[in-house]
Image 1 (cartoon, rainbow, N blue to C red):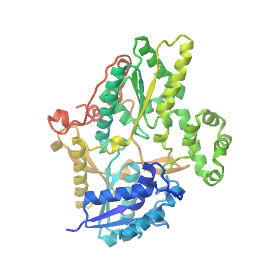
Image 2: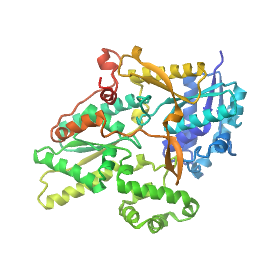
Image 3: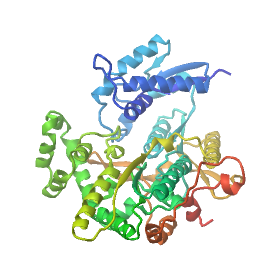
Length: 500
């Protein structure tokens, strides 16, 4: 049977553009999206060994999704000029390779290819779109089913029916291996504090799971910061106190885990970001006309006094990140804000002040790390391989039974795989209203760390001891062959949540 490899052109192009640093040729034309797009496509062709290939690009005119559901991609800003100029080049390259480019309206493509069902794999945004597609196709009686599958390493797409997303287990085990390696070196050299930022733009699930696996000296949980209304100085002071207390014991070393999205959970920063989002959404054209050298002063003049003061106090790089650089969804690119360096520098400043006051007698030197794509691109763990296969098979069964607008669900995942429970849950059950670009929009609610949940309680019960003692765990690499107790275990988060 012949195979067709159909590539979502805009999706791959955006992934390449935002995932690869800016590149330009001798004429000054940006090329990072071109380079990444071609590499991803060639690898997909090699991996899939398909008989035919085609690339589909979105239409410039509004599609049925925009007409039916105005929030579709309503959280995204227009395509950056640096990316826009690369689109024609990509299409020229595809033409030179004799690869067809499809720009038909969505349903016309499905009809042309004889596709009767779609499985959309991704996080909350992708599955929100799955819900939109399912509702539209059903309303138009097109006979196309849409099923979603939960995939995000952040761990923030879960509820009573979706216990976890595939990828979370692999990412946390990969990060924990590297953190364990750092802690082994840290305990050997005994002269550095390692500030380690971990991927997870909203929830702190990854940081919490890694903390449970490696037992660092400190782990900041964004949701706790927000609940306690902590300021940036409060966070810095809490770290500095642990550094000083360990130094008094002769231990001038340690590890601090920091969730990627921390900045957005500091209440004062959250209020600033919310006002910035609303202001920039309403004044995008005017802001674009302001010279870059004047943009910071312009924003300070436009913000409320409280937020203007906070914005003005931020380092230039952080302030720019908050106001200028956004991802395709219109969000602050928190992964580019070097929170780990910001915190270590502020801790160093506070400790220097304490030393002058006689409150600190030790030494402080910092190393910085950010772990992101290292976990997202890792070979899947046994758990994720089994879980992903099960989700896919369940999706096929939902389609076979005529369902649409459902998300594939597999539960009881801490038990052996043969005891897992398969099913489906309507995606509409997960929707709620959130403020995006100054307007309330229906989206799938992100699952944050629950401070009254078993995983956080287990962490909170041990963190004071971990802070003072050097009680590191070195998990080592993911194991694939051997006893089930070693190779097939679910995350500690899942085990604690299900009390197994």
